[in-house]
Image (cartoon, rainbow over all chains, first blue to last red; front, side, top):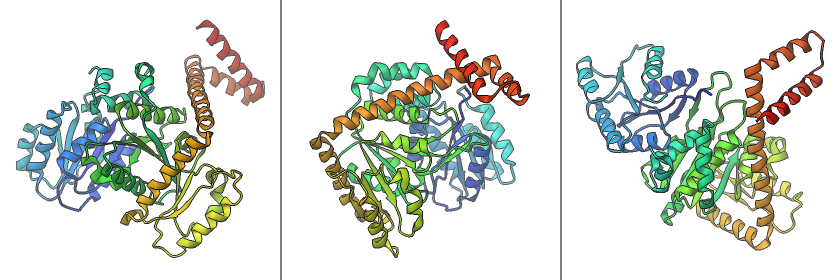
Length: 132
Length: 316
């Protein structure tokens, strides 16, 4: 039996704009995934704890506040510390082009900026999760 | 990852993985539960149910926080509906429990109702067993109180809290069948709204028809958002537990629950085998075709499926 892919959709940091995160959550749901939505203003620690308890395949984060350079890598590192670096990490939101290479290097597998069709994100997650 | 060793070592990842394996129906998971079954029975299991939007997650969140103050370990299994069309789900109960996930003494697991194959009950109670073995003192099962499968699930809890809100009006009448019977405690949430007292009175009136003379489910007005009435609610949970143990009805109820659980698991197995047969042999399509061509009626077709099933069992 095919198991659904489980994705934690999270909003780290302090901005309160979750429209994008909600659109992505719905798109992932409609693609047959189980989306665990955490709500606003989650710390990296909370996001990692959620991902572990929910046995997620992927953590998808959205930031519009500009704190991505700090918060995205923090989540990746915390997952590593917990021995959970097999969980795919992707990010989205308002992220300048120049920051993307550094984020990829820090272990964020994919960055999806405004205008990305949700199908691109869906396919990326489907093709890159590490567990069968 | 050695799941069993991890589980016994309080490794959250192992416990979380084991719950997934149960959800996905992996036989290895059942084997682990079998081996650890003697370690279950420590946790108190509380069912939280009620119509959509009454504040079940918030009530669960506040109860969990109160229990954490008392040093108890708390597990939560929160069930949300899966879309029957895409198989996907948005599991949003964590939004109302946002700061609980920073607490190491809490383990929250969100679950979709998933497919028509059933198995929800098995998955939820498997998850409860995992959290029990993991060492939780209290485990909450939170689920929408509509639909037979959801009601069947909370029935297996030690204490069932039915959450309502003022203004449901005649809806209480509509949902009372099946719902009024399973509540051990009724909590009228959002009681800062108009009509809170009247809603409580209406529930009381309904409870007058209750056949159990010994235990009458209490009705409590609460405002979960403001943490009002939560301590009292916990007291009522304790009282219900005391009553159950004192009255000796607990043993009886527990036996009933175990009977239900065994039947659930059994039915699951039967369904799985049946679906396996129909998928592998295409028999269901042939039968449907025959019924469509009026060469057969659906009852005889079902009999044929039953024959196939018994033959299959004999061969194994």
